[in-house]
Amino acid sequence: MQKDHVQVWQNCLQIIKDNVSLQSFKTWFEPIVPVKLQNNILTIQVPSQFFYEWLEEHYIALLKKTIRKELGPDGRLEYSIIVERSAGSQKPYTVKIPTSNKPTTKNDPVSVPVNLNKDKGIRNPFAIPGLKKINVDSQLNPNYSLQNFIEGDCNRLARSAGFAVAKNPGGTSFNPLLIYGGVGLGKTHLAQAIGIEVKNNLPNKTVLYVQSEKFTHQFIEAVRSNEQNDFIHFYQMIDVLIIDDVQFFAGKPKTQDVFFHIFNHLHQTGKQLILTSDKAPVEMQGMEQRLLSRFKWGLSADLQAPDLETRMAILENKMYNEGIELPKEVVEYLAYSITSNIRELEGALISIIAQSSLNKKAITLDLAKQMIDKFVKNTTREVSIDYIQKVVCDYFDLPIELMKSKTRKREIVQARQIAMYFSKKLTKSSLATIGMHCGGKDHATVLHACKTVNNLLDTDKRFRQYISEIEKKISLQ
Image (cartoon, rainbow, N blue to C red):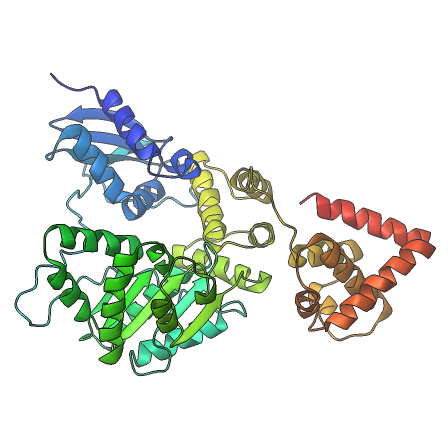
């Protein structure tokens, strides 16, 4: 009995929905329309070439899994991409693909077969041909290069150490190099970028990136198959081993034990270890002390939340790589609105572009505001020092560079003091951090600024009005 293409796609969507975030599902899968099912080939229609490329780059493994589950091992998928042909229409981010000889008219679909044979899984680490050097798939994402990792005060130490390691893996004092920091700050990007640089500089080196949970699953399988020695031997042959999210070894004593022996062997033979974690070694719970002590042998470098300038540079770099241009006010709004997570910042940018492509709308500040409100819905937005400074400077019609300068002009000094006052009142930042954002002032200057503002609030009616109006503007974020 021939299956119904609509029902097959609905079944696929149920699986997909359980494996992606709600935001991603709404953005990338809800707009897809099933077209037909013929000869075990499901054809789906996507709104633009941009959609097709994004799905191919980010969701091919998931699509492969779901299609095979629904249609069997011989199941295939084809995209039907709508090609916009009207002369006057705005096509900001669609890319035309080669079509057949038949003339196309407006909204003619172009079918593109999908290669479901892409296999990005880690190679079986137990298939070792004798003791010779083996050809290992490094599992590195080529998009994670050091050139794409934007440097700022938030990551300068880690990035510089990464450069040193990439030039001389195993030969510096940064072994192991432990990169730690919060979610979405670029730990995986930097760790993989170092591996890519090593491969470029020293192609004979064997580099392997593996997530800690994958490492644990491989170890469990090795124990079950009585191949534990082969597992250890495989990892001891790696020249540069990158373990992502090493904190997930916590509470797994046997995995920690086997990693301890692999770590020792690699370190003693001059091989490089690169680890990432969401915590510094001193804060890791459930880890053996002997392993923690080895994490401290090299350098522990933290990644902090990026400042405004770094966020702007990240967005501009992303736009350049994607061949996209956005109005400056849209980029600024994004950078001011999402302050603590680079992944969310880039995700918001992509969502705005996707909406523009899907709805054939120009990207404006209003569209950006609508998307950002949806993107950060149900999350508490902490007001940032950068945003406070922008509101204060806009209120007094001052360039933000002037506020951060050393000038002692009365109106500039007062604006700077107001920004310090609100930064202390509305953020969790330390006095030293506030001072650093306001032109490199010390904590005593920030205290003096807050005292001055409080005194003026008690004595100056017009000044009170300034503060009230600025506070309302800040609260509208």
